[in-house]
Length: 267
Length: 255
Image (tube, rainbow over all chains, first blue to last red; front, side, top):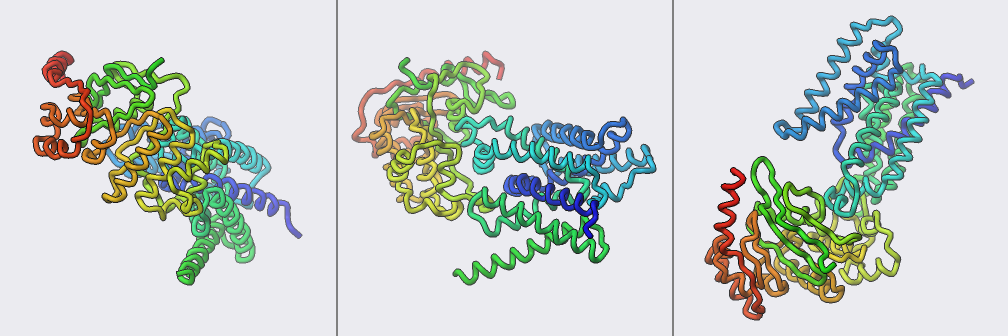
């Protein structure tokens, strides 16, 4: 008696868990969690602008996100303020502007709550196409640039000395983050998307010694969080996005306790 | 072509200050050049210019087409959050044949470390690993940026011995920045004394007697160094008089 909308939701959730698993490892390793959060906040402005100009809201989110990242990049070069300060300004500036813009657009079909916290149960076929189409692009680009990305994360100058085009790869990474945030927002929402990037990756980190297995672990624990979260959400009639993130956090806590116990026994 | 890298009159200006001020340096096959100088003298910048990581504002840098550079950075910040083993790190982006990998591993003595995580290595082990990685491509020139800076004395000695062995067995060129003047003096044939411009160059023996060296490192350091260099050769080229020239050029570009 599984309904179509649940299958859609499952497909969307699993897709997002795999994409965020791939990208999330680098977000964790390169300490870009706050950046991801800010990017997600800026997406609200993209949604408002998309509605205002009658273009696809996902396109709006990607466009605004990329502008946001470019703006941050320019500000960073001035070096007057620390990056987290700049991010704080840009992030909340974008979130507020987005909220104001949406109130001005004021279309009846807009459900602000679903953008803030996600609404996986109303996922449509077009959303699935965005998730899987975007996902293939994201994963293909990460796999192609894999050694460069890992080496840059370890030592950027070493990578450059060995011929990695770090500027190009950095821009590519920002673009991928923008894309992932945009396609994932339908699932867990603007306020929770960063958690899908960092919690499964952090869970996987407890058990691995290679970046490749960290990605695999992040994808697996992300999928587990989606399944557990959705089941819980259906059983207890709780909001799905927060339920998924709650499940991810619980899995992280279990993994953390588990690895702590294991390391105690090993010593 | 007799040079591997040829830097001519290069200047790098940041915020109106010349970090490098008309520096010329040739790297030829088989050279062992050590760059010395106080903190903030532009040594790392010079290395990065030689490798092409930083663009120069004036002057020109030419590299032999197809030049293979092995780079050993100052240190690898072994971040615990990055899960990676020594073996994976070595083979990342490198398509070395198994025989080459084995040779380099033996050469640098890291065989016992291959299965370990990067972040459990000691400072000396990390530097040997970086050496191994740099050597995997069979480079024409090895560029080292203060490779022994974070090591204790025994570790420093061991690392400089390794560099010496690699240099004499592989017949490659070495360009190294080092603060460990007393250790470098015994192995290098060519010392370049850098303080934004090249104030002095020559063999270790002669350079410590140079007034320009004394003006940068101080009388005491020069006297101390002279003790270590009793066995060195004689060829020496000094640009002591250049100080006046550089004063002029400062006025010339209005800085």
